Image (tube, rainbow, N blue to C red):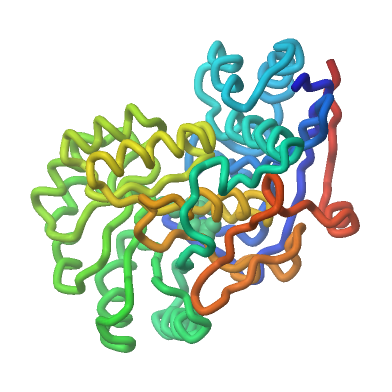
Length: 368
Ligand code: SMG
Ligand code: MG
């Protein structure tokens, strides 16, 4: 269809508790939503960028700016397009994958709503529900960590991921295994906080049979991750480094990653995410769906993606109440440790107008 306008909308949602990673603490989620307005209907997208450029180079205000100046004008003048054309239309703009992903998602949602097809069916999902994991931030004390993890395990989460950084790594893992035993999936995420010289330290995680260690080294250190993989037994899983299917293929063939965290925003969209899934499946590399503290909009799309057959590990797709007291869509809830994949047309969820209005800090309509 032809798109006549795009609305960008900045929303701010308070988190139920602070979320600390090796790069800082977040107390609310400032998210950028996109509404694509086309000749046959509308669709929603959500940008994975966070407020500051500390997870990746993208950040909310920057994403809004690149959309306004460069990306949306290209889509508005592209004529009749489908989601499969978006990457090509935007290809002249280098980088900015999270911004591009949000726009492609909104176009895809509009298209699928118009044709009555769900994201899950379009992407090739084979599951009706996906196993739910939870990402647990760095805490002030080990007691706080044990309490939080105990609550999540009792709620039914199927695996725990804890954030680590130098000074908060081996000891929290040891305490969690000692307290809760070996019978639950446990993995760690360093968000690039270590160097190859830390290999002896990271090797001390080996006795705790973690499912994986996520992105221990820098985003560009694919070769060094391959070296690290020879020095530690815990499987390495790349997140930040995997920005495309090409990067995924390189990392796999170099031996830098045994598992991949697929985040659609980080790779430029759900279509590229599906390509990475297909590639990993062909290589026999397990994948799981990462999270960027999505609202119900992004969570719906992630649940659909995670229902593809190669997503064999629980993802960071937790219930809405893991982060938000009030989600902007109907909330995703944990049912026996699973999140149900929406079946309605497009995303299958829509923002609730009053809630959306409450959390919106600005909107901008960009017309042809
Ligand atoms: O959405 O459940 C979620 C968060 C999962 O830990 C999570 N994401 O590196 O994987 C990651 C982090 C990035 C969060 S940046 C705010
Ligand atoms: Mg990560």
